[in-house]
Image 1 (cartoon, helix red, strand yellow):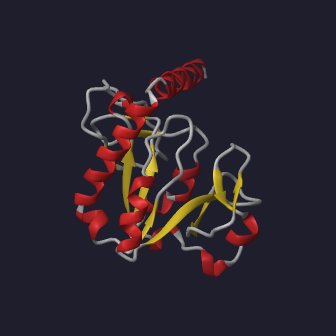
Image 2 (cartoon, one colour):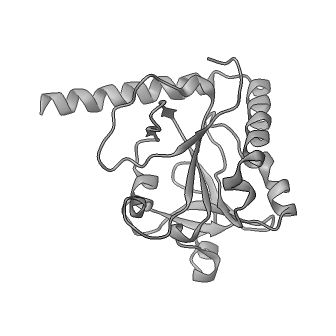
Length: 202
């Protein structure tokens, strides 16, 4: 019990440290990193062949994938955003996102499609039917282990990835300063492929 508590405290401390690292980046460093990331993403076959992609709107220093949006629109790619699923235990919907999608702030202060808009089934796609999911990271290591915000939203919503059947490619994205040697992992943690902007931000 003490060991598990110690591990949980260590993870919380590491999560705080990594969030602070990315939040200390200047606006210019954030913009440059986002540009370089998106240039990398455009070259990936997992992005170039995808017709249904989920990405996220960044908060609290997360690296910004949204400069990719105009390029995706020109390629007639349908873009989806993660939305907190109402009346469920920390799971996500993936909802179509357009320039005129009505948006609200969820309980974490993150912009997402309005629940009444997202509630219509034809505007959502099951996660297994997506081609690629771009996932924000708090931390990552060279073994493709990821650390998220701690709520388990992506882990629960993507738990099917450990079973046979159709599944998207998961691309975890982060600043270089968010890499660590090793991360503590749990059996339910979902791994990603990683992309980070080539930079000198540590």
